[in-house]
Length: 133
Ligand SMILES: [Zn+2]
Ligand SMILES: [Zn+2]
Image 1 (cartoon, rainbow, N blue to C red):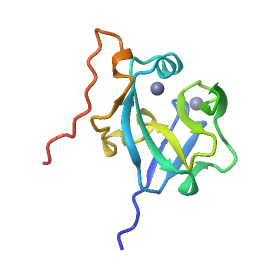
Image 2: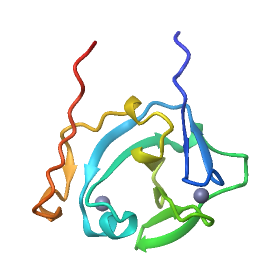
Image 3: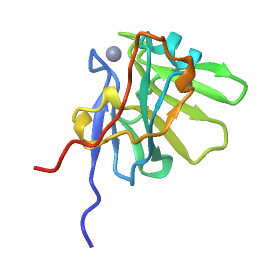
């Protein structure tokens, strides 16, 4: 069996780092008002990883959490403020912003775009798998 791929990433200043070795799920874009205000970007690209195979490195150094809605917390670096993750209560996956990955090309958001109609009208966001080389 092939060794599972590892995905690593972190914040702008390097204080918060993570490693995910599970299968990435639900790579998508979101343009909801919460994502926009939280990130400062018109659209956020997300990907989910199973919590059981996800770890913050070094262990114990975790993002600061902010409860942004009844059942969701969003995590950012307490030092530099980078937006990093979202965790839904009772959900087995953690959502990671694709922009925080060391190699963002490894995750290609698909056509799913949550709250597409909420994006600024001047913004055209489209995720497309690059042609195979
Ligand atoms: Zn940081
Ligand atoms: Zn959103």
